[in-house]
Image (cartoon, rainbow, N blue to C red; front, side, top):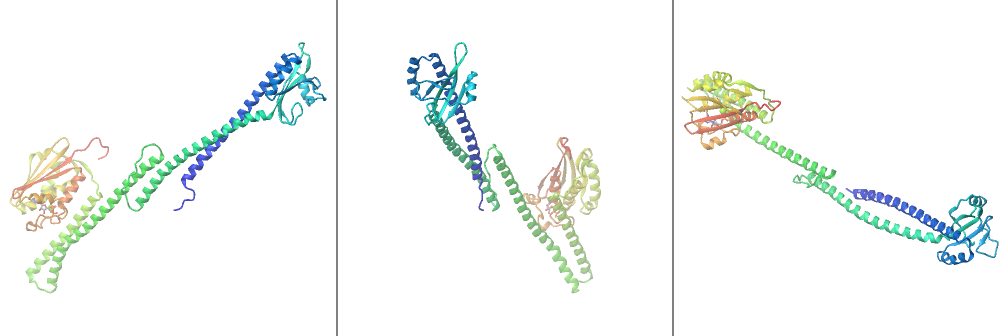
Length: 477
Ligand SMILES: Nc1ncnc2c1ncn2[C@@H]1O[C@H](COP(=O)(O)OP(=O)(O)O)[C@@H](O)[C@H]1O
Ligand SMILES: [Mg+2]
């Protein structure tokens, strides 16, 4: 994109305007001040000379001796009588001072006429002249006339020219210096802005591996810091999106895979029914199998929904304190029929009675039911023991069985979705979606808790769940 008025020109223009304005004001002031200074100086010299002349008592010899000195300095003077007629030096013609009536009156009143410019010298040469006029009085204060002193303007102009030259030089040098400095400063600023702009362009093309180094001096630094923050957020957001997409894909694949088996089974049985290949007993059995498979499909759908809801934080825990005993009694009651079926016994140890748990009651029951159901599933003619303990930080619930147990490799995988140890131990009575433990783990973690498993093949399995106590410091739990 072509820029019509790049930032660097704007900056330069700004700097230049400020510099030129400042320099002009300064130069003008210096020259004005210098001019006043020169005028004051000339005036003072003239006044000094005037009193020097007066001191001679207008003695002609003495006056003549001064002429040389005055002449050297380009000063000419004259002594005039009351009417303004020249008395000294004697010049042949009728010489008049050319002062106005008003001026003559001012002199008579005892006031000097201070520095003024005239287009000619006291001797009527056509040269621009500055001059003053000082009145003369006798000792008894009678007005006698006046002294006029003058000097060509060029003498003053020479001084002024020198001053102007110096000011101009200073003006040029400082302008060049200021321009160089502002140029450097502008380049630096533009460089920094460009760096941000390049980084932005990179991000626009999908490159998020960018960090703009910066200090903490000004707005551009702050912009850089914000830019870095923004990129970090963008990066996280992008990886989250990719992650979600990945999860969605595996989820769809897994669900499809999980549903294929029961659906194929049902389809096969329906085909058999369609062509009447079953006798009455087989027919009954296939209907039972189909019911079992559809139940399994429904559970699969429900558990998937549950899992997704927990995963995406869509469930809200309603946590409060309750006695562990209360929950355990309800659970054992609910599970006793299944225990009897598998010829197992559920034993609550004494400690269960003394412990309080801080959790969502229904979700807590869901966790424990899942674990005990698993134990019942993989144990026959055995015992499921529920134990409890507590520490300062948490309540522990320990569920042990003396069933078939798991190998180390199996233990590693039980938290993965759809994991079922091996088909030989398939027992479709209470589970088989492979989602039970992943859901349990998620629920425990949602409670900021912890779940651990210990197991040995053919000896049994123990699950230990820890629920943290309510943190008093937190305002809301
Ligand atoms: N108490 C246990 N004893 C032995 N194996 C167990 C026990 N609990 C879980 N498992 C193993 O972990 C696997 C996954 O269990 P789970 O996540 O509950 O799946 P499902 O939802 O199919 O019940 C089970 O197939 C089983 O092999
Ligand atoms: Mg299970």
